[in-house]
Length: 338
Image (cartoon, rainbow, N blue to C red):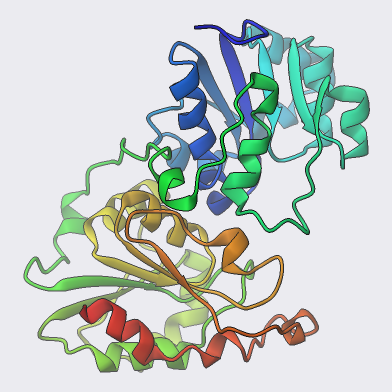
C-alpha cells in the first residue's frame, strides 16, 4: 500500500522538548498502521535521541542540532542525501522548513498559522494549538491529513500507538538500589522551569503518608536540579534514595521502567513513565494551555490531577501556583495505595 504521493520515506520534525517528542511518537505508529512499508526518520534535538530510539516505529534518528550547525548549502545537501519523499513539520522551525524546500522534498506539511510555511510548505493544515480543546497528541494527528489519514484516537487508544518498546536494560548499579519487595515510587519535583510545580512540602508529606515498610522512594532530577534540591533532600528520611544527577537519560529511562510510580508536574520524565506503562501521576494547574486536557500523559496507567476551577493567577508569577498546591498529598497517597 502506498500513499497518494507515493511516500516511501518520511521525516517527522519535532525539535523541542522530551515530553513534546513523546506525545509525537503516536503519529509514527499511526502512519505505520496505514503504510507499514514506509520508513520513518525522526528529526529531533540531540538530547531527545535516547527517547526517540525507544520507539519501535522510528527507523532512524536525525540530529537536528547537527543539521542546524551546517551552512544552508550543506544542510540542503544533507537533507537531499536522506532521499526523503516527505516531511511533516510537527514543531515549526523556520530554518528546517526553508532547507526542506530547497532540498526539494516532495511533500512538505506545515500549518496555516505559521506564515513562513506559506512559502515553504506545499500542504498546509489549518491548525491552531493555542485555543484548541484537543490533546497535543490529537493535534499532531491533524497533520496526517495530507497522507489521507483522518483518524483521531481517544487518549486510551492513542497510548497504544506510542510504540515505546525498545527500552534499554537497567545497569547493575541502577538495579542495586531497588528493593524488589516494595512498591517503588520516583518523585521528580522540578521541571527545569517548564511547568508549574507542586511544592516540596507536598512531596515530603507524600513520603510521610506511605510507610517505609511497603514503599521505597527515589528523588530524581538533573545535575542542575541536584543543587536546587540538596538542602531539601537532607530533611527527608534517610531511606529515601537520592538519584539527582546520577543517570544519563538512557539510564534514567531504564530505571523508570523498573519503578511502579512516578509523580511529577508536566515534565519529560512524567511522559517517559507513561510511555513505559507504569503509574505516571501528573500534577497540573487549571490554566490554559498548561492544563491536562492539552498535556496530560498518555499511557495504560497514566493519570493527571488538577483542581476543578478556572484560574490565571500564576500567569503573573509562574514560580508560585496556589491552585496546583490545593492538590493534597493524601489524594496521591490514596491512588498509590489502591
